[in-house]
Image (cartoon, rainbow, N blue to C red; front, side, top):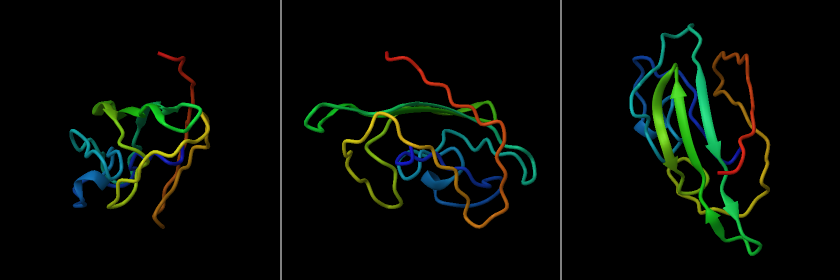
Length: 124
């Protein structure tokens, strides 16, 4: 869901702010460890995302949760998101559809994506 970002960038021996490095839940939670491989090597991300749920009036019934494995290493452990992710901001939740698009981005750096799988999980 494009409102909730896991940071994907080169963080191997690269200095950046903690909640903006690879594996971070952008602007909210730094990764537990820097699991980045060297530039030019494939990076893998396994992300379990539980979308927020809203009632009929738009109030949050259940916040979003995210677990992330970066290169097979647990870097986010069922973290509760405070709302959509943003740079130097903590925007509040706003009611939205149960399903939204997924965005992949770069910051003018050469990047390629492959083997992207999306699998819906049942309700808890």
